[in-house]
Image (cartoon, rainbow, N blue to C red):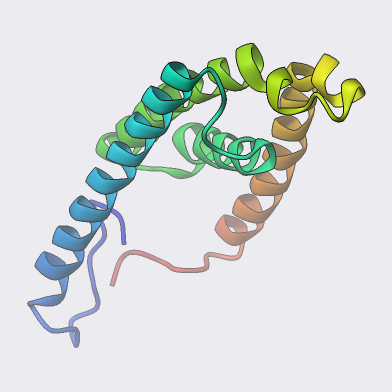
Length: 142
């Protein structure tokens, strides 16, 4: 559920405050995770999130920040997560080659590989989200 969703009339009145609380707790912990991953990456001169996971996640947040999210609060949260992701992307591009010494081709092109994977994942997320929206799945009016 998003911040402006209205549940159907038959749903318990406790549903919305409980889901909003869980969403806030989960979002806060996710934000803390990003901050700690970025901090550890910069301190240890490595990267904290695996290459594909970071590409997939960054693409997800771009698509949801600029295409899917409807409410300003949701857009803001996804945009903040994109900015925090950029710290992890910086660590990957700057120090990722150290982790790939056993694969010199990847080590030499890790930044390009990240952006190619991110573009590919963005297309996938966009295709899925645009189909979901076009089919009016998960309507939010109650």
